Length: 133
Image 1: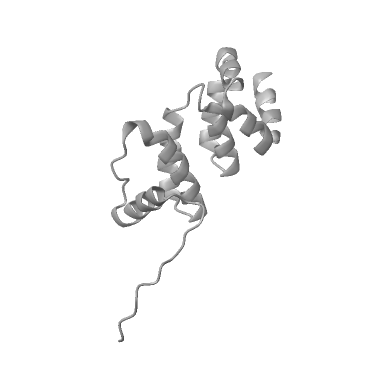
Image 2: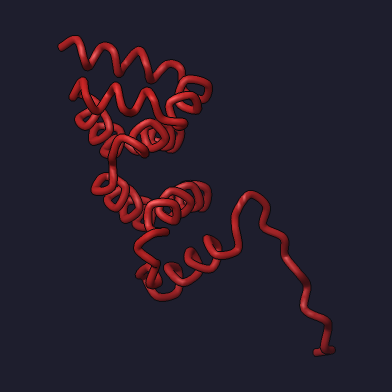
């Protein structure tokens, strides 16, 4: 076999550190150590990657991490992510968090709420329906 220069494979739409974490998961069946201040962002990006590459266990692990991390700053963005990637458990956790009027008001004031309105307007109808129950 003749030696050839290693080909470079380009992966669009994913940061290198997210791809590296996904590869670590594929080979080790666990997530690499992630700094506490990066865990939510990494879980969001890994959830997208897991959905893209059909890695259901990784997707569930990310969903679990995000369910534990819902707060007024992340609720709207997390709800959009859950809707876009078919994460029913995460969506329910977001609805539960947003059932509180104070949490909903705070989430509506966040930057993520504008993203939610523009990317998943139909989920707002579901949110309002859940609040009226």
